[in-house]
Image (cartoon, rainbow, N blue to C red; front, side, top):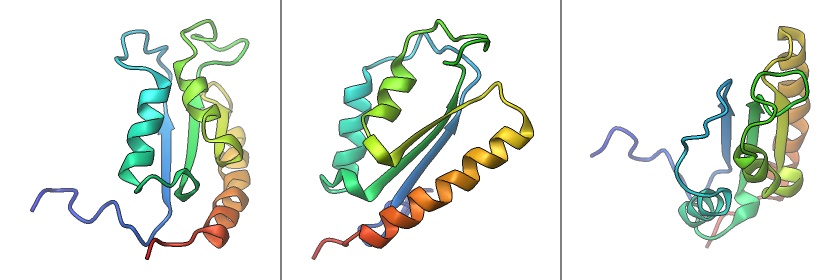
Length: 115
């Protein structure tokens, strides 16, 4: 009955995409807690998730010296976590998302729904 009913499906890969140009020093929680919450939401299967994040945690970008929570969160996903520079150009964004397609396709090919 909620506005997001059916959003998380057992039979589908979850792709989490986020963009942040803020260091978010005020964020609550820890990267591992966020990771575990997503894994739990996907029935305990971290291979059913791909995470794409564009953040300011890059040299020359405002926020590069921020708390590393976004980087830590992305890195917890291993090869299924991709990190890009929010301070990049539009062409950089295109390249980032184009490269993500192969990661998503591979994860989808390897995804086995429960049951």
